[in-house]
Image (cartoon, rainbow, N blue to C red; front, side):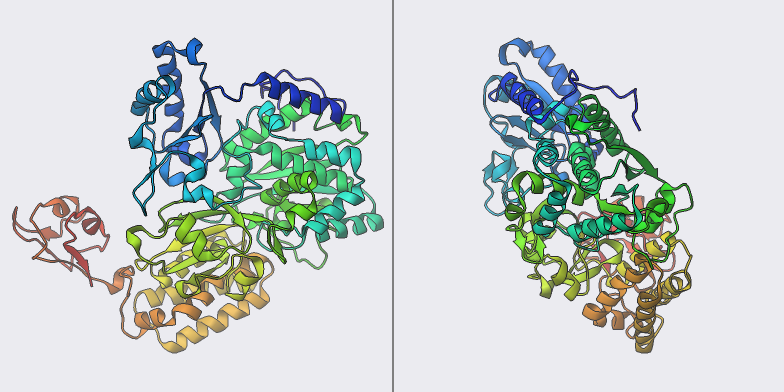
Amino acid sequence: MHNSAIAVKTEPVRLQSAEELNALRDRIIAERDPQRLEVVVCHGTGCLASGSAKVSQAFRDALETAGIQAKVMPGIKTTGCHGLCSRGPLVVIRPQGLFYQRVQPKDVAEIVQRTLIEGQAVDRLLYRNPDTGDLVFTQDDIPFYKLQERVVLRNVGKIDPTDISDTIEAGGYQALAKALTTMTPEQVVAEIEKSGLRGRGGAGFSTGRKWRSALSAIKKKGRPVYVVVNGDEGDPGAFMDCAVMEGDPHAVLEGLIIGAYALGAENGYLYVRAEYPLAIRHLEIAMAQARAYGLLGENILNSGFSFDARINRGAGAFVCGESTALFTSIEGKPGNPRPKYIRSVEEGLWGRPTVLNNVETWANVPPIIARGADWYNQIGVPHSTGTKVFSLVGKVNNVGLVEVPMGLPLSTLVEKIGGGVPNGKPFKAVQTGGPSGGCIPYHLKDTPVDYDSLVAAGSMMGSGGMIVMDDSDCVVDVARYFLHFLEEESCGKCLPCRLGLTRMREILDSFSKGVGSEQDIADLTSLAQAIQDGALCALGASAPNPVLTTIRYFKEEYLAHVQDHRCPAGVCKDLITYAIDPALCTGCMTCARQCPVQCISGKKKQPHVIDAEKCLRCGICKESCKFGAVLIS
């Protein structure tokens, strides 16, 4: 709903036509000097956590202190996520495109003097190519960015998400104006169908087909019809939708309005988890600005079409990412799934035809309408068109947010864009699709990242979480972690999920203690398949995926646990022992000081020993040892 406390940055003028929108854009472009010096500071959640707000303030203070405001006229722009989160806080100097990484407030005075005044780069803050050792000056030349193709993230990291004039300058709401003035609702649906866009929330269902089915339901049941944004991103390690809502909220809103026009909806909802306060705030600002400019609300662009939307905050239940649970939550009831005997496009929110798409899907709609389905479906592969946004996390050098064409080999994504595993080791597996996805092993590293290929490998696209693992990760422990997460997040409504997941987790717990047999592995597989067949909703039906894929590709590791009572990765505490190599120990006493139970003894500058009976196997000694003297067996 409209929040009167939200300030509109630009002077609002209610636009009456597409021509007025174009005139406003031309005026904004004409008033801005493309050669003006500009300091762009990433204010995505990751960089904010690393201190980028202090960096922004340091730039303001340094410019004022230096007294150069009038001379070089630098501006300071705060944006959404730039993507390369592991190198934050990130700063880009425009128009040169100079890229600085890991910038701290103490670095700002030097940047002001060397770069803004003298026009020179601060070499120590530049990115260095890990393969060649060469300094890389601009963002576009960094392999992490160079190999991406940004459609959904086209403006994220470039615009101020709280200033609608930035969005309009970048082409925002042009697609909406095109749809309202030159296309019928039927033509909009047909264009989405032709594009081949599939739902980016996990299932990969055809977006155009969903919209077409909703139109058929409306003909039978009449109106009202609702459009809903699923922003309840809950996968561990996933932050794609969060970054889009934070960095380009108008893209999501514009896509929703276009969808509402195509379906004849007068009201919509943006369901966003409460753990995303910055995303919610930026969406509130975007909605207030869009209303002020006549792009949301009554008689949009004087077209006769009216539509408004409101934000619903999710309370953090993972199961509310499932469509029917999300609907019951919006309706003010406990977020429990309903049987899908009737599809949501026929009976969704309040029993009415409802189209639910996730954040990324809606953000794809404006560029498709603006540039055409023929442009879009040339990106990617025939049955998985367009691009996909991923959060690349785990044991990888370039942790961050990436967008690539569908069908790109997994190895390109992890090893080239992601920079590979630290210390040059090959990755062991990649978990795709979140906790309900599967683990793809290294020998399948050239698997194309598209919907059908990932399913064939035993995993799925999911919403786009991608967790890289190396040989220090135990697949039994990984399966336990995800199963425990899903067990806690299950609503408990159906028996297969309520009892089955608990029993699966208990079996995995016993494996981590070295208890069990090969038959138990077979029984675990059988139970997993039964849950897949009998669960009420997609949470239960997909929950066994991590277990099934790890057994499929890493059965020897399971056998090592139950037959040899050994954890090859050295993770499962009941199956490992910590010891100190006397040849490597210098007697620095660091490990002894760090040990929480004081089980390490020895004199200074002499080899130390660990009392295995007292040891908690917490790993602090190994982490604190600089000489690699602590061993796991």
